[in-house]
Image (cartoon, rainbow, N blue to C red; front, side):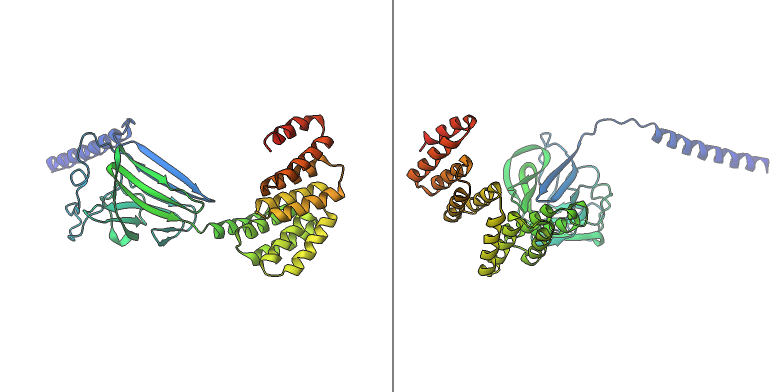
Length: 359
């Protein structure tokens, strides 16, 4: 009996020693550089951000596609005969994150973070967004956790030694994300509903401190009319701005919304009121607003109106000269600039002379 007890004690001590050694060994692992270093790339599109986190293996004189990364790989223990996914990088899960709802290759994707996998094939590749984001590569991939699958066509490109993700062909609401390695790139398009996201951001901000100030409402309404979107909301914001500050800028903003809605008579009445109460600078800024919109004739009319009200102001003649120059009426532009120079302070004369020398 003593012998059996001794053996049991010996076994328990051995097991405890083994466990302790494993724990101690694990706790004493030092951090060393990884062969495939971590990388992260972020791109802002409008108010939205996309981030891809990944690890970067090197080609290292190896044949990548069809060899290091086989086509149609089925031998990773998935056992269903279907091509197995590749981790689209190295080490832990490659992940892709969206700050807002997006459209990826025509598919709606909710804001969030997803594991990014790819199935390399001789023809089209399959890209997978998985709800699992913390696995080690694709070794524990489970198709039941798929959020989205879509197909893309790989393209030949310049040689890339270290696996890289890029964002290219950026527009105000879209971008092309691409994996690049060796001589291939695997691109997919990401889009956002820019105006919807901006308007929702305005709504959130306007229930904060910005909501106490007329210019915030005017800015929101101006964004809508400049982009011809959400005009109903724009009208509500324009009215709020006017209620806080009935001035030329707020009245002009509402007049533009009315005109865009086909209510020209109401728009004209507001413009008339705005011009009567507007300061010299506000009227001048309205003229420049019209110039920016390409309405040169109307801008000239506003600058001439401002001159009638402020005949001794060099600045309004300067603005009129610029408008005539934009229209191509050089003699009228020269006359306006000469008048501006005669009224201008010394600090402005050299600048006006420089403009006149180009006319």
